[in-house]
Amino acid sequence: VVSWTALLQAYAQNGHLEGAKRVFDMIPDRNVISWTTMLVAYAQFGHPEQAKAVFDRMPTRDMVAWNAMVQAYARNGHIEEAKKLFDAMPERNVVTWTSMLQLYAANGHHEGASCMYRLMPERNLVAWNALITAYGETGELERAKLTFDRMRERNTISWTAMLQAYAENGEVDGAKTMFDRMPERDTVSWVTMLRAYAQEGHMKHVQETFRAMPERNMIAWTALLTAYADCGNL
RNA sequence: UGCAAGCACGACUCUACC
Image (cartoon, rainbow, N blue to C red; front, side, top):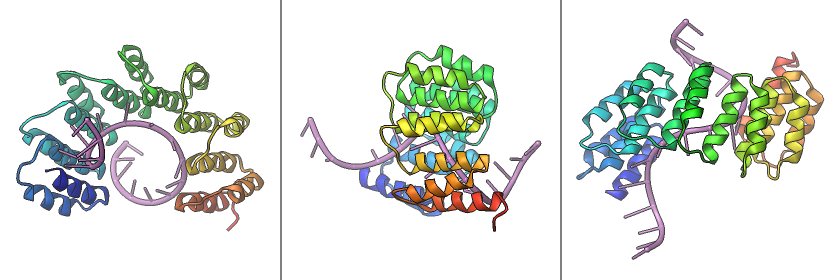
C-alpha cells in the first residue's frame, strides 16, 4: 500500500489526475492515506466537488482526512462549506484552526479570522506564521509586528511573511529592515524584497536585488520581467 | 526500533470566480 500510495502521490503532485485516479483504482487495499491523497489531488487542482465525492466515499476518516477536506474548501474559497465541515468535525487540531484562520483572512473576514485566533487551543510556528500573513492581508501591520516580536522561534517563512506584511502595506523601509536582519534568505525572500521595490517603482533597487540574488528561479525572472513591464520599460 | 505514502504558513505570472 505504501508504494502504491507513493506512486499515486507522484502523479498527483504533477497534476496528472487521470493517472492518479487510475493508480488509485488499482491499489488493492487502500487505506485512509490513499484516500486522502486522492482527495487532496482533486482539491489542489481546483476540483473541490470531486474531492468531496472522495471524502464521502471514504470508508473511514481520521483527522487528517477531515483537515484535508476543510482545506479543500478553503483553498477554493468555499467559506460556508468549510465552516460547516469545521463545525461537524469530531475533533480539531492546530492544523484545522490554521486552515480556517487563513481562509477567513484571505477573504477579508477580520472577525472570523480573529475569532479563530482567539479560540485556537494551541499554536505552533506555522500557526503564528499564518497569523502574520493574515494581519498583513487585513492591513493590521501593527498586530503583525506584535505577533512577530512575541514569537519565541522564527523561521525563514516568519521573516518573509513579515517582510511581505510591510511591503503590502506600503512600508518598503520596514521591509528592507526585515530583509537585512533575516538570518537566512531563500529565493522567496529575495523575490519578496524585489517585489516590494517594484511596487514602489524603485527600478534601481529592483535591478540591484536581482543581481545580488544567489539563485534565480523562474518566479524571480518573471518578477523582474513584470517589474520592467509595469514601469513601462519594455 | 529504523527507512518509504496523506492535511495547515511566505514570493511572480497565468486561469477561474466576484
